[in-house]
Image 1 (cartoon, rainbow, N blue to C red):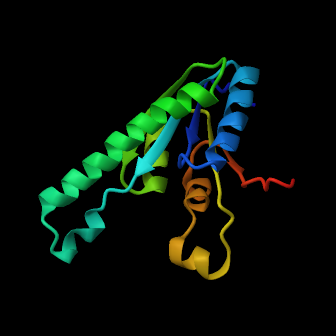
Image 2: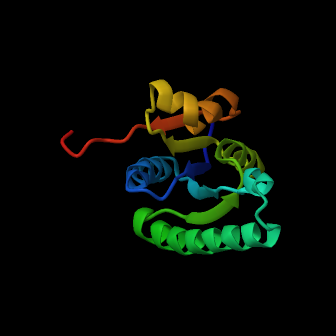
Length: 150
């Protein structure tokens, strides 16, 4: 087995992200690895064709990123006890940004959540996790949301 010294933990900052963080933290402690925690904010570039002034889109994206950075700082502080973890907010399409950052950081493992969408929901929204699993050079551990009753 490969020596894993860095783990990329992709989160969406939802309640489910805490479960994903727990798995990443457990693995990092066992492997002696550090964690890069990433959240990807949408670029909104696909909405430029709606005749919205570009500076308005840029301001809106800037506000999203600023809010996400504050949330990320709190999330990392609360959910990664006993391991070296740094948070990063990326902008763009989630799967592409996760894969790119995993390669740039030379991580040995990607840990991320999956919403387990099926049917029409999956056709309309796709699956970031599926795209990452199919394209990643590294192993990918996906965590499905755990129901409260489980």
